[in-house]
Each structure stands twice: as structure tokens, then as C-alpha cells.
Length: 168
Image: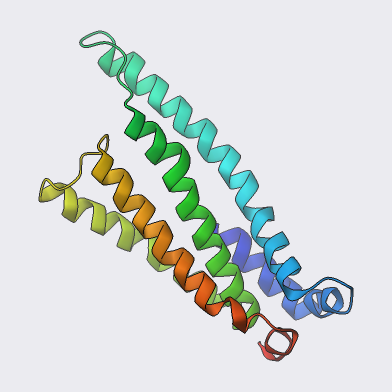
């Protein structure tokens, strides 16, 4: 996500494409949503296909010979709903920051998020708090998506033509 968002926003801002889009009847929110969805949808398709394949092959190779096919409803909800929600809200955040500030700032957010999220999950797992197939793990993921969503909602008022035009 960070590669697509960062490079395209940087190029479009430096070439004046964003300013040209702002001269059309599109609102800043339309531009933001369009750019976010243009990165989100292909990423979602890729993630769903890869998640399905990983779940299938892990079950087929490691679990079926010993205990049968294992997929809990919480694994499905976590992987096919909660993780994409995190990806969507993070994508919206990166694009709103990239449009209203420097695109590099949005890139920093996405670069920092992954190690922080992995560290959080490892620390919780070491303390035996979540199990990847448990409802608690799903709730934690949905909570992370909600927090990012609240941040996006709070800063989305910054998405104005003036703010976009004056950003670097």
C-alpha cells in the first residue's frame, strides 16, 4: 500500500495532476476516496486470494493428515473482514495525510504501522492473550480498525481544496 500511495501521490502532486483534478467538479473527498479505493480494491482482491490459499494449504499440508480441516468462524472473520477493515482505514488515513500534507508523511505512517502491529500481536501472543482463531483476536483487530477509523473521521475535515493546494 505504501508504495502505491506514496509514489502516485508524490508524482501527481509534483506534476500538478491533483490541482487539475481540484479544478473539476470533483470534491476533495471524491479525489481522496477514489485514490484510496484505487489502492484498496486490488490489495483486497490479492489479500483475499492469498489468505484463502494459505488457509487451504496449511490445512491440507499440516492439519488434514492429523486432525482434519480446521477453520473457525473467528479465523474467517479475522482474515476476511477485520484485516481488510484495518487495510481500508489505514489506506484512507495514508491518503488523507498524503493529500493534505507531504506524501512522505503518509508513507511514514504506513511504514511504521506494520512493525507496530506485528509487535503488538507478538506481545499479546507471548502473554497468551489472543489465539489467532479466537474471538479476542478478532475483537483486537476490529478495535485497531475502529481506532484508525476514528482518527480518519477526526482529521477528514482537514481535507479542503486550500489545504491540498498549499501542501507540498
